[in-house]
Length: 80
Image 1 (cartoon, rainbow, N blue to C red):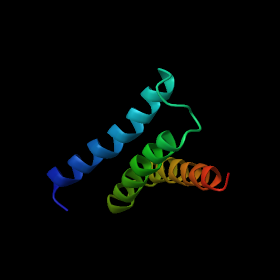
Image 2: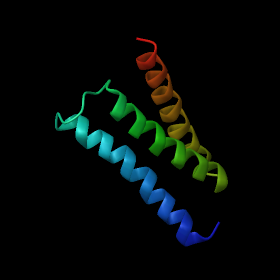
Image 3: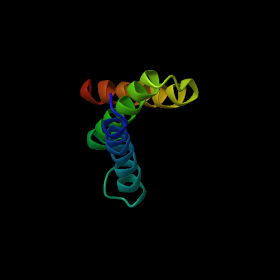
Image 4: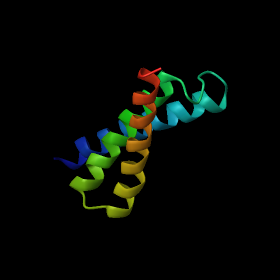
C-alpha cells in the first residue's frame, strides 16, 4: 500500500471515530445509538487493519478493542 493511500485511510478512520465522538459529546447522537456505534466500529476497524499492516501493536490493541466493543454494542442493539 502506498504511503499516500495509507494516510488517506488513516484520515478516514480517524474522521469516523472523531465524528462519532463529537456527535455524542454535542448531543447530536446518543452514546448507545446505532449510528454512533457504527461510526465507531468502522473507524476503529479501519485503523486496526492499518495498525496490523504497519506492525503498530500498541495502536492495534487500542483500535482492536475499540472495534470489538463497538461491534458488541451493534449486536446488542440489533437484538433488542
